[in-house]
Length: 340
Image (cartoon, rainbow, N blue to C red; front, side):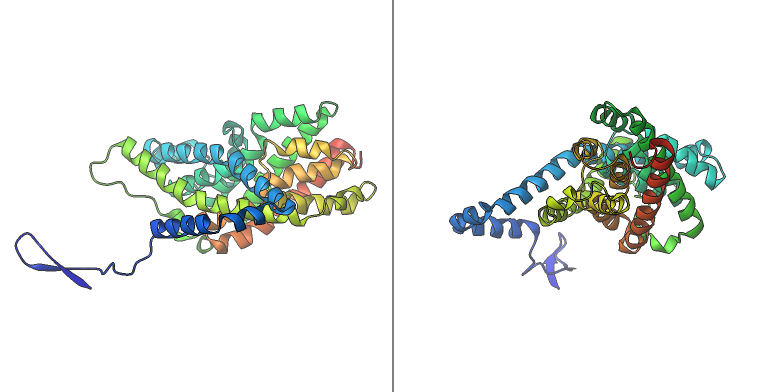
């Protein structure tokens, strides 16, 4: 501890700051290293695998960032202008019914999965049951109109693919919400995710909005970058030749496409075009890809771990994955005719 004089001459205690390393120091050191090792870095990044990975990393972050910003803006608006009493009046008192309402409400948020995470947390902080907020988290990026239109454009000769994706994604959100309402525990969610931000005395609603949005963006942005980096590494590590051997193997195709959806971490508004390009595969594995991706992928798991805690993520992600695969397969068999 060090002492600093006050205006009346009396010393007061203040924490010692000597030797502290902050983000500015780290940034300066990284810039200095980059300048000194410029030639070596250029040679290293000239490798094809590194170029591919860096392209994927930038693509994931650039695609997701606008929707993450949209999500934190909506989160700030909820915190500043939507009282908890209004949410309690709008939602049904029965949790199971409220989960269904939250799933359908996903139609109202045009964005990807990154946008729904801060909104779901803010709903929890406003008193909405976690199962209801999580149902909205899963539904919003998968059943909104932009995603459905993109799917229709990507599959112009398969109109039932749009219906199948909508039904399977909505079922994934609602069933997962019901299961979490029954099996989930409050202690699995980090306390910070449930703690409502207390505004400063006298602060205006717009000040609360700005502070909430800034807080959410800073916290979620770092985990988005971490998820994008993981997706880039895994994209390079997955050989493209693996997909060419799955044309006649339906079960293996479903398993591989489900895992690939987790690994690739595509935006829910762009993944339909990737699925459509895999024309050697039957429709069912491609439907699984489209349903699993917005529900659970590496960047989304990273965001959930940073927002709700690791104890939550290690339980919620596997549950969501299993429910999404089952809902996609059942819907595909009923709507698409299975292996077509």
